[in-house]
Image (cartoon, rainbow, N blue to C red; front, side, top):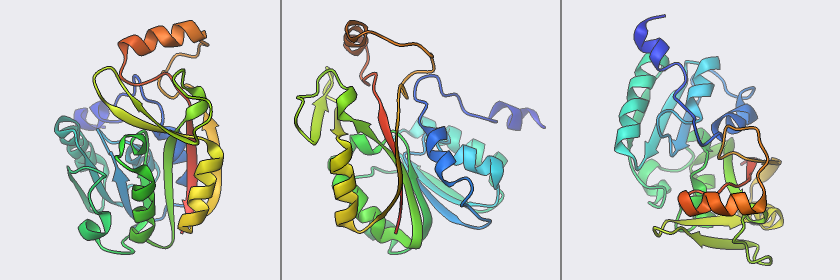
Length: 228
């Protein structure tokens, strides 16, 4: 293995650990020459784990972080044996207008949907760009794990100290939404502590202290797989 491949074998995950759980949902479903869209690909996102098993995947990825996209491009050049393209874009644009209908075998997203202006609308539009029988694997923030949850809203928006807005959900709302859109729910699991690599339990007071210093909450996420 060359120095370049060794360096970019697995981009670092020092804080967000949600990519691997999403990848596991579809590792046994991907096939050679499948076309995959990753929303919020970052430095390699979920895609890096898929390419480890099947390098002949056609990858399209976008993110709003240009620095991360540069690293993703280097990684994909070394690992993707089919076609790939990455570019700067927000998930809030019209996905149908950008990509057309029924273009992808898989759409994947980890730790990103929560930051959309309207995640429900994004999920609705993802169904349109999936091929018949295609899969969407993604994460959503669990309201019940937030110290700021109001205790009753099925969907709640949170605003960080510097103004970053995120959405949180209750599981029953997510299931109802997916059914309304017309997705077939394959699985939904709750993964704890996806915002840390440390295998420790924190008290409620410690969680509040962390939130004073971090823009992302110490929280739990639903990891979801649906099929069109």
